[in-house]
Length: 472
Image (cartoon, rainbow, N blue to C red; front, side, top):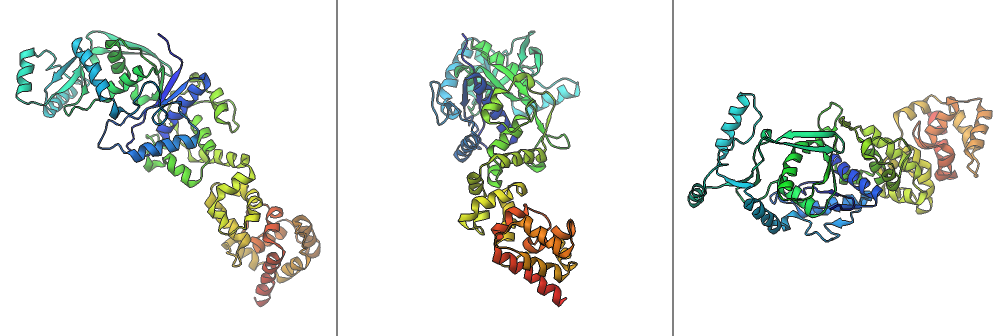
């Protein structure tokens, strides 16, 4: 039986989602959106000690902020719930009984010490660590005796011997894994909790997931999961294992090397469209280098364009897309985005004009504070560079500028008048004017910000430097 395309994101709610897992969510969402399929959100919260409701709510908020709406799953519903693994224990037990009936699982009474000794012996012999099968052939009376003694035990899945599990990875091509090199693995722990291999595969099959894009670190999990689904005569999704994200040194990206959670990105002031455009190109090739909407990103998304090499995280590239998003944001939305950083200084009537004036000079709302203060403060803060320029400029320059300032605040006409009156041009003209009027030697275009400074404030600032330079 074939199903319509359904991809999924299945996070464990043990912390805030970061670049690696949100990129996984994005790729799966783009895949389903392009095909007109379903994007599923499943919460894998079997780790009761570390899973938190607050993290579930946070990841849902993050996905919604990014526009990655899920059509089925936690918080949305569907025909295959519950969509939190903590509520699916009865389902897992039911299918475990089927595996037991087929003699595909068996109890393992080996202690942690025994297993560690076995691993060390294998390592010293140059063999890959895998379970040696000590409990695989226990007779029923031996099993009953050990259980009667109260010995703790796990349940292991019995891998077939002398076979090879083959599958075509959507990203990495043909794959094959000899079953003898995998060994029998645990699917239920001694405390009664289920292992990832089992519940993840079972849920994908029961929820009719057809495509799974996930990190390459899961590649060796796949043959185990295929074996489980084959034993249960259940459909196997198409798997694609995407490259991992690494830092500048080639190490796995971590918080220490600059990885930020989606919540942190949002709080800093990144635009969702900027984050999406950066992540979509992190390990996936797009021919179109414009800032694209989610629909446009989905339309151009292609599995064959997913790379196998590690994807290198570069904060400057993320900031590039942030700058592109700023250019495409309308004035009203930009003013709202600036929020308190602007409203502390900027009159409400000026907010949109101020936002337009500074959009080329900010990446985040807090960047606007320096320009808001430079325009509206009565006590103008000065940079060291501006002070140096002002000290070397004679008082006559500022007196001429103050006399020529007109109430229409046309900066180009004003600067031309100062040029003709003083004979100054180029940097000798524009740097002293900018320094005196804004306290900075760079920044937003003066024709945009002079009207915001206003005639009275601008003339007062110019005259201050007439007085200061006369005293000197």
